[in-house]
Image 1 (cartoon, rainbow, N blue to C red):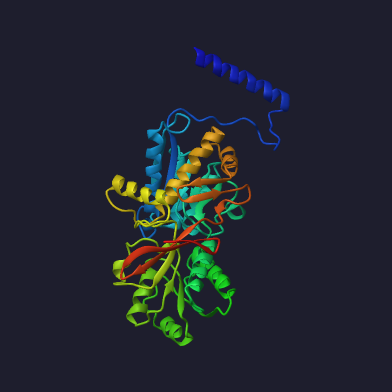
Image 2 (tube, rainbow, N blue to C red):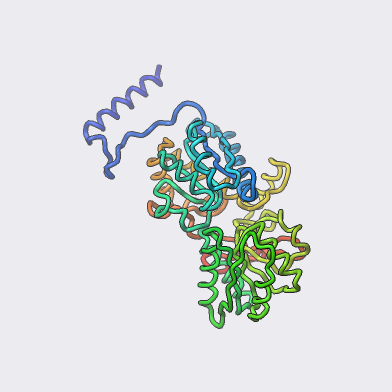
Length: 401
């Protein structure tokens, strides 16, 4: 009975406020909120569960599952449990829209999409067109932002250019002065990575980029690119690509006897592909954290220990951190907005400021919906073993691995 009286009082007060101010807040938007319905808060998972992108989406998906389990164990969000509902995009851009719309028809109130702009944007657009917030746990392309996808799309990923700047500075700090670029232009992330690496590296004293070659995912031979790399006199190679093509290029590079250090990007995180390049060494890339232990942050090491205990195997990539972080942000914003209505939830996310997550700070604003910078661990591969070697942020070293 008391609950009914309270609800009636709130309703009457709402009518009074609406009558007094015309039903609009200072921004001109309706002040009425779509209340949370009874039952679970459903989060759609329009991700790749098969195909080449599955390796990138598995970690974030499981990270999200771990976060949901933690939140539900504490009573959920505003008394509502969270529920993840999956759809498989099969690593096919064309299926993104179909899968996104299907999940919406089955009650998805927030949507998580693939960790790449090209593959994740179709499902994001399908969701935001229905006033549903969509988040990619780890897309790095600058296009996964307000100017391209509108005010309801977010990425928990670090902007590609920020990661590349950290790797370029690391290469320079290691003493390399002549870089050669291998650019895979098949996705936006790799194009932005190479451009940012070149800009940062070339700006350093006595450093220059001595050549650039294009590589493709379906190239069977990299003999020409390897020959021109040899001729350039480069002392470091920046590999702006992703698997499986990147692993094929590396295998041929080392088989040809070229052992100069290779710098790469966050898409190369994980050791699932290392068996295809036996005894790889002098290979480096940036990552959200070290899934092999030794991360400078104790909570990150604890996270991966918990991940292994829950799923019975180690994480495939450190992207799992951003899956967990995405749920942290969504839950906090729902608490603030008290609704999953797209416009209200987006306003709450923007209002969180530099909110600290397991993956580091995720600061958004009304005009910027991708993480512009956060600490990155530089991972090194030596003899097939992966370990953290340094931590960078904002293009400068902040800690050893």
